[in-house]
Amino acid sequence: MEPIDNKESSALLQDSHVKEVLIADKGDNAILESWYTKPFTKKGDNFTSFITSIIVKYSLDGNTKEVSYVAKLNPCWSEMEMDDMYNSLFRKESIFYMDILRDINFELVQVEQKQLEFPQCFYASDEMKREVIIFEDLRTPGFKMTDKLKGMDVPHATLVMKALGRFHGGSILLQQKTNTNNLSEKYETLNDHLWIEKLKDAWIISVLKTGAAITESIGGYEPVREWIEKTLENIDDFLSEQWGDSPPFNVVIHGDCWTNNVLFRYNSEGLPEEVMLLDVEVNRFCSLAVDLSYFMATSLDGKTRKDYKEQLLREYYSSLISVIEGGGGSMPFTIEELKQEFERKRPFGLLWGIATLPPILMPPEDLPDFGTHTEEWKQKTVNSIGSNEALKTRLLALFDEMMEDGKLGS
Image (cartoon, rainbow, N blue to C red):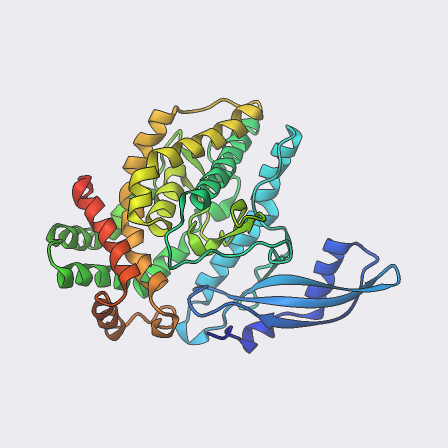
């Protein structure tokens, strides 16, 4: 499938943006000569923004050079009337990179630890209807996406869990060093949840109903269907409980850590050795276990999740403790307490797995435009279960876990 283009979104980019990015990256002596956009993402890669690359030709010290950046832009889907939601998401991500991440990295550098695994952000603007964020192009040093149709294997998942451990550990260290228990009081965007109100009606409820219809079509999962329908009736209470205050586990979380929002770099033998986390537009301040539950449910297949859950949690905890204690902080909980908190947040991951796996694993040509999950698409998804082995296998693994582990009463 060819990369998708969005000329209206690309038109948001201006010379002034590119000049500011170039100077931030290459220094005051860099002179912009020309630039153009080059799309590289496909339908289904991004749901709330348009991503494109910017190819920049510039001169520095008498030499002409070229560099690539990645721009995240307002998708300009004006017919959906979601300008306020897009602005909220871009503002949250802008503040994350320009303030929150900067402050966490400052604390890490102070104690001689490496900075967190996020791309460098050179520019961010949350001007309504003209939102633009520009990053380094991680493809240049060799980072790339893994196959979203396959569940991550243990080496990939371990890198993600370790990166989340460092990220969450950095948040705890910042909280302890600044004596700020609730970072949402310092960074107000952590309390901005407008996006969930918009997505709840435009997407979440619809795809969860599709999940319930799938259980009915397969048969044998009546308790799962009843749980989904009961949760839908009380969706606000469910989300409030799962996202609610949960000391001592509260941290700044990624909020949307799944296969498409991480990139890997590989060694000469083809094994993953580095990871970068992307797309933090739904970051918030709540239990760190929300990130862990969400990631495992959406990005691992059932066997890997079942066989390696304990190992992955240990890897996460080891990474977490290395940042906190290595930075002179104190661990606020034990690994056994972490495991208990993970189980309390398991329903969150299970629900979002049911909601997100169909659009993740459906062929791109079958995906509806964002926010237009119609009855026709629901039926198409249900009908595809027989032929879409990846979707069927991943969903059934979630359903089986729910029934086996007693999560239907949660």
